[in-house]
Length: 406
Ligand SMILES: NC(=O)c1ccc[n+]([C@@H]2O[C@H](COP(=O)([O-])OP(=O)(O)OC[C@H]3O[C@@H](n4cnc5c(N)ncnc54)[C@H](O)[C@@H]3O)[C@@H](O)[C@H]2O)c1
Image 1 (tube, rainbow, N blue to C red):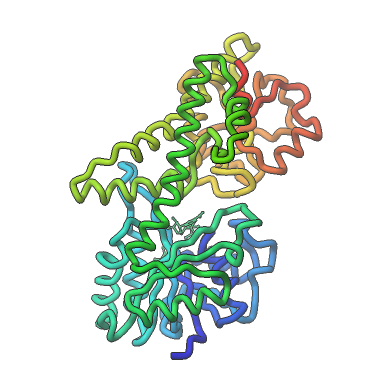
Image 2 (cartoon, rainbow, N blue to C red; image 1 turned 60 degrees about the vertical axis):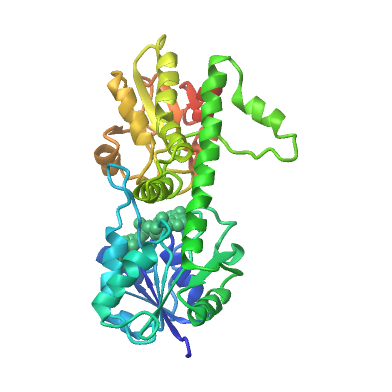
């Protein structure tokens, strides 16, 4: 089989860089149901900030919202969101809807690869039946399937697709050969023995990270009571060859704080109640309360109960504000009658007011009524504001300062 055309379904933080990388070797159809996303990409813009203007625009990469275009692809790669609902249960609606759309437009002989983070079993138990039902084709005879988890790290310009090993798996040997060959054109691959192993590998990468951060967060809570600076402790302990440098803080975003719930959900279905994994989640999800308490302590002798929260997205140098824990920090402060103004160079004023329920304030406005400027997310351009002395007339703290200074 000659693989010439690949369709990437879902052009977000994961799908767009992948589509652009593959377009160096293949004809790539980028498909997304979000028509405004397609429009901006067609104009050479990328609001996710993963590409500088125009660099995702090539002759071998076309963008479309027309599902019929999927029929031209020899390989279809699905990169749609896998969030959790408000009860922390997996929300598989996007993976399911993408499977329906791909199934309805599946040409015989196509290989469908899933990249979205899921619990072991989703590809085989949920996606394949939807592909079969909507295409009228049978797995093995009519089409093949694989799973290859994404390891993209938004905002990280070092660990880009070509520099990170990609796990590949397939529904049979031939599927694995094809999938491995496609991904080998952009990076090094590792063959997992089954789709379930590949799914499990991805989910535990983020669980391990979540738990290690939870440990540092718990140590922060304990050492705070002992008047011990956690960062001094980490520096000292870090002199041992096998100590791993995880940092305390707020855990937001779509991966680390979300993926553990995928595995614990499946474990519960199978009759096992997770203990360690959920304990880590509980600690990380409550850390905004610790930082709020520290801010309240600082405000106790202040001239006003007004603060400016600077930096709102879920991590530094990334414009994505969805699943940001700063929202909960603001809410907690407001609950204690603190007036919160907020600013982030990546977040438009309207979004600040609607999503973060705080009044937008430019750092260049008169800040004389602000008792405390909290640098909650240290974007490079926020560090530059600090260096330029924009907050020179105010007391300024970072979350790290709050965790260490009394
Ligand atoms: N962002 C990360 O850091 C990261 C890293 C590794 C893995 N992942 C995983 O990759 C997957 C995608 O994440 P993301 O951050 O790129 O999401 P995203 O929200 O940035 O983008 C997803 C895109 O999919 C589109 N979409 C939704 N349903 C669709 C459908 N039925 N058909 C076509 N397009 C559809 C959306 O319009 C959106 O443009 C998730 O499972 C996530 O857990 C994300």
